[in-house]
Length: 79
Image 1 (cartoon, helix red, strand yellow):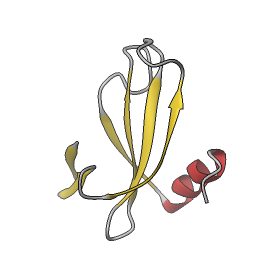
Image 2 (image 1 turned 45 degrees about the vertical axis):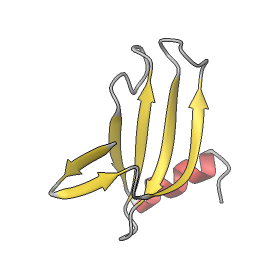
Image 3 (image 1 turned 120 degrees about the vertical axis):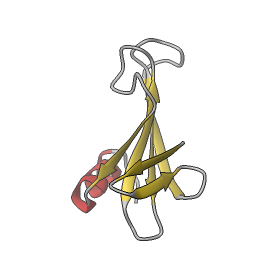
């Protein structure tokens, strides 16, 4: 997915994939997947996709602060 935010392009095919997590069952309305990415200039973001009742009912790219990225990694046991 490619999305422009504040005149900067975020591209899941070009940026570095760090980790992912899954919640719920595949194909269920509340199930979703989050993938953590980082750009060349060290901006972290989540790419989220999920069912119609999930936080990611539409494919989404959400920017993270350094603190939010560190918390996401810690919460998901990623070093």
